[in-house]
Image 1 (cartoon, helix red, strand yellow):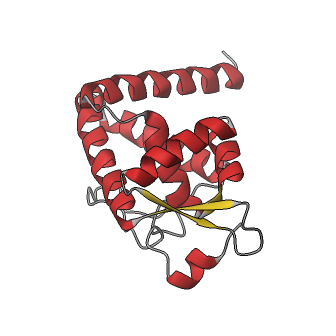
Image 2 (cartoon, rainbow, N blue to C red; image 1 turned 90 degrees about the horizontal axis):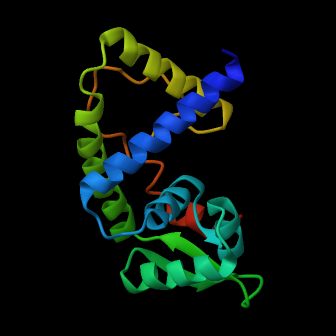
Image 3 (tube, one colour; image 1 turned 90 degrees about the vertical axis):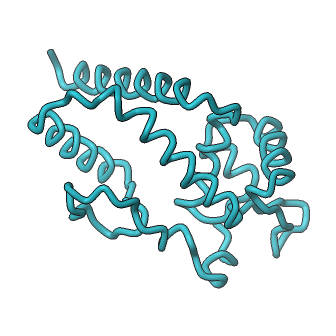
Amino acid sequence: MTRDDDLQRLLLAVHALTRVAALDTNSDAPAAQWRTLTLLRDHGPQRLGDLATLSRVTQPGMTRLIRQMDAAGLVSRRSHPADSRVSVVAATEDGLDALERWYELFRSALAPHVADLSDAEWEAVRTSASALSRQVGMVPVGSNDFTENPDDDAPASRGAARRSEEEREVVR
């Protein structure tokens, strides 16, 4: 088996676990909503078009989603300071709280599906997650490195998610 085969198997297994856990939550919210809030949490306020590109959806599809999320109080929209024709979208505190609750629910739904992994398998999962996250530039929320305590089950700090007002004004 090649490394490419290993990566493909890993991705397919993660996608399958994600689908199973998402179904187990019985949530009516679209997965795109959680993906969008995660992108806004991790990347800060985004232009609508850039957010569509990051999320790999069409701009009209993202516009519909953001309209629904705005009506639910999960995001806010404002005009770009340099071009009033462009919308800038940011996660609201309510949106970040909803995202945190979703991840807690998602982790609880996922837990029974991986409960029988051995300590060695968990170490392999931890090592793989850290290595691959670094490769794609992901940094755990509230952390500048991957030196978190593996035995600490406390939720990650939301310090990075709760940006200061100055940081929120910076638009990419």
